[in-house]
Amino acid sequence: MTETPPGPSRLLGLGSWPEARRIAGILREETVGGALLLAGAVAAMIWANSPWSGTYEALRAFRVGPAALHLDLSLATWAADGLLAIFFFVAGLELKREFVAGDLRQVRRAAVPVAAALGGVIVPAVLYLLFTLNTEAGAAKGWAIPTATDIAFALAVLAVIGRYLPTALRTFLLTLAVVDDLVAIIIIAVFYTEHLSVLPLLGALVPLAIFALLVQRRVRSWWLLLPLAAITWALMHASGVHATVAGVLLAFTVPVLRSEGAGGPEAGPGLAEHFEHRLRPLSAGVAVPVFAFMSAGVAIGGLSGLADALSDPVAVGVVVGLVAGKPIGIMLATWLVARFTHARLDEGLAWVDVAGLAVLAGIGFTVSLLIGELAFGLGSERDAYVKVAVLSGSLIAALAATVILRLRNRVYRRIHEAETADLDHDGIPDVYQERS
Image (cartoon, rainbow, N blue to C red; front, side, top):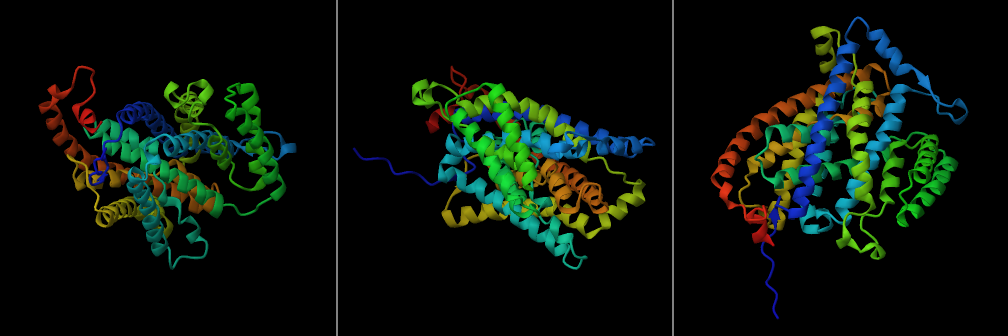
């Protein structure tokens, strides 16, 4: 029996129908998370620029925690090191799931978003370094600030303005952001670890190994897993490696597929998806908004203060990296994949769709603010400039992407209205039936 040779690979293909349904579910959750994130950031900005700004700074500086364990940290540090560990744990679960059971396990499907993510990291970093080339020593430490895409904000904007946009674009954005998170995690661990203590780092491997053993045996008891996760986090924090890395390492130990004894992959979602389902509301609804509230508050000082902040070379580099570097890097990498692999865009998609999504990826917030704090120190003058730049660049990217994608959404809405009758009896679009 002869096999039909595979056709030409397609960029930004539709993906599988189960994957499309899963993406839709995540989009609904991230929309709420994005709104809460925005609310936290706006509340922080209003408070920090109000007559009661001193109370906001006092709140951020308030210290709590056991001093004997070197965990008497400020609330701002607890938000960045503690709550964001939950965010990175959920990101790690999503990351592992994509590479083990999602569309990223297929090299052909993974090539485009992986290349796009790398392009969206390299070009903004290069532009940032060019704009800070003649600045005083230390400015280059912020090179990674404009390299991160905030998935909660980006997906929230896309969900609001792009109801009729193809699922392929939504899947591409999520996959790009997942790879982007992985790169950000590596950057934080490698480039922003200044003082490494070997003994706590080695000690963290012990509770991490026990945690891995339990989850590999499909243990779900929180009273066993949570203390082990907390000990791993504390030891990682003491080692000098940013504590959020512990969240990713813990997530990578969680199995994605069901064991054969439990029916195998066909029996339903595995432990990773179970944990992700339970913890995503905590991450999107509490951890990230609280971090935004604790980090985004910066006293601007009116229009003159805003002008001073945005005239700083570091701030200019961040804004240019987010607004120009991200779309240029993503588009260039995607075009190179198409040029040298002879892949082509999926039917119904145009390069302007990719351009709109690339501009949308310039929304950087959570990880960008975190890297800014790691690079220049929480509360420093330059950290304040970075916050203004990240907020400004993200706003510009969101507005520009809205213009492009709203126009494209109108086009796809007309197509959708013309093809409404193309759904079959079980509600699955014919295009997926044809692909299967």
